[in-house]
Image 1: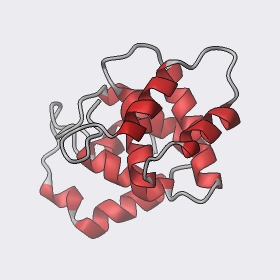
Image 2: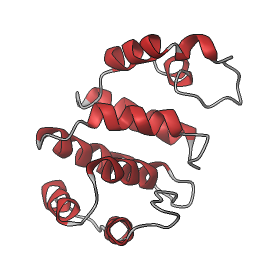
Image 3: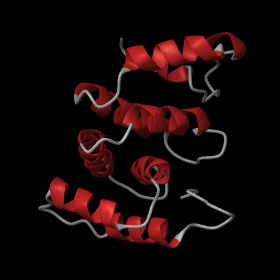
Length: 153
């Protein structure tokens, strides 16, 4: 997991990762969200750390994606701008974050399904930044625009 600040994982992020790793069935997403918020992690780092934990290739199980989708839904309802923080995560994915592209796409699909993330707003953001014209989309390219080619609009 590369949620790094000043070269090392912060204490709050380490606690968050340990807490997420210790989740057992049955779980209550609202209680887990309460624990996440009680940790000393900035909103942007919280969302990034959750997304990295959900999509890392260092852990197994698709359940991570559904847990994080639920947690990000709680984040949105509590006033955190999940859309903006997800754009930041997706922009950096592949360049400095190691993870599963398929898991990222599944996470985004779950967030769209739960109305936590808007593909339309994401497309507007890509267009306004000129990102769609600056990348050559290939099978090995993991860039912010590649999501649009794999995601069924």
